[in-house]
Image (cartoon, rainbow, N blue to C red; front, top):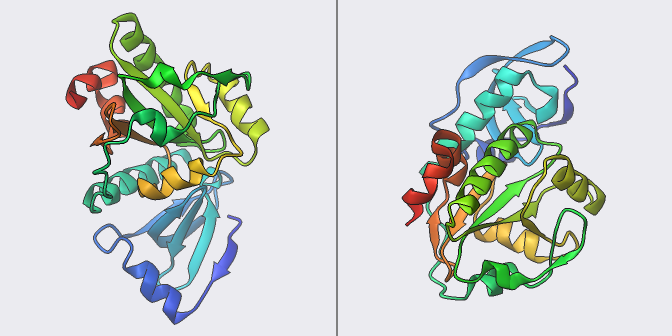
Length: 235
């Protein structure tokens, strides 16, 4: 296994040890090439998984370098951790259009009118094409979205990209037939939304009502389990 950016230091250990105290367990991690390492999960930082060996050494490993089973394991830990975290404040009554902004684009990069979001329940979809769990979940989300649209449900999605470039973002949208809008890649609002909703890992789906009040931070798990029927949970 290629182990990148080995980070040492007592201060770092103390900080990271507090990140997921109830989740850590020593286990065997396997790379796509079959190499293994004994370590415990510390946290996920976008496309990087941080592990700690029994000797206290911190290892940074790209998520897509891990086996499929390990990627699923990371996803399950992140979901448990996210449920245990306090909710970020969302007391604002700002219209949803004010929250996501007016500079929205479709998969072709063409501008989309933001009024499509008015009077709708909106899912903020934090995702990226480099993320294997995202690529697995996106078709499920597209299916649920199209079902809800066919049923006339007042639901929309806005893609908040974690891709490395605008080109990657648009390619991901096209390759996976995303029928919804995205916040333009050059907008600071993408980073603001990540911070406001305490996004530690992806995929994540945060559900907001028409006034921007958070209805659920667990849209990813809910759609994974219930598909389009998850909409009823947000009403």
